[in-house]
Image 1: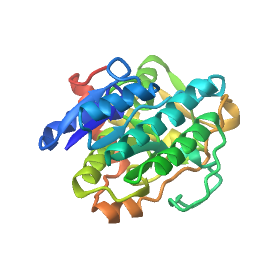
Image 2: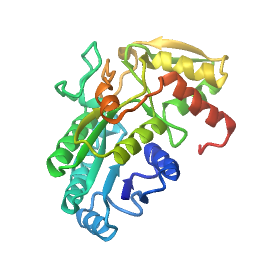
Image 3: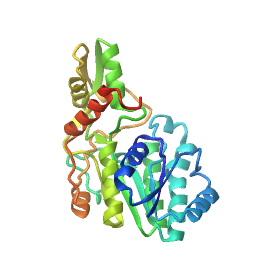
Image 4: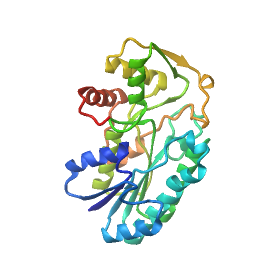
Length: 289
């Protein structure tokens, strides 16, 4: 199949590129804004047609959650309108589309893991635009899959894991939120799941994916420091109210992954196992900084 991966220079896009070597039966088109502006409907239609695309994996998004509160138009353009263009182009060719979404479509007031059937209720511009994008993709493309994920990190780009390692080495102490609960997601594992969906065959619908297990940002940081060999920085638990942000964060956003595991036969690693793998690569110096 001919597979288009948008947002190819991001965390997930880079992992898709790395894993393409293990899925060499397909032909790939890795694009970022320089190669394909996903906000340009005509450019998308031409690209998808000329390259006879069979599957679009949209890894592009506006993810600056706090900045989104003041940049609503740009956020909506990238998270809602552009996915609609991609989905319509896929539909015109009878192609499939995989749209990556977020736990921010929920307000985080649950106390048990969110299933795909749970009512959505975003509490931020970011979450609102991502939900609109989900709806647009499902409305425009018959062979559409939406994957909601959370707390994404990798060896690529800027992310929480890299930031905590850097701050842990720079500071004597560090305050981290302990009353927001979720599950980290290693982008490498999410990329594996996307390839499994492509290879086993698209089953339309919404799916949840993160690593297994549950933690707070505070617990996550302690594990990062432990695995990175950082013992000179004291990590202090903070309440959310002690660390105000422009955008509201879900207090509880653990995702139930039963559906994606059963539908595509996935085995998902525990978050600590995947974190250990990521930090080993970062510590070896072979990762892109």
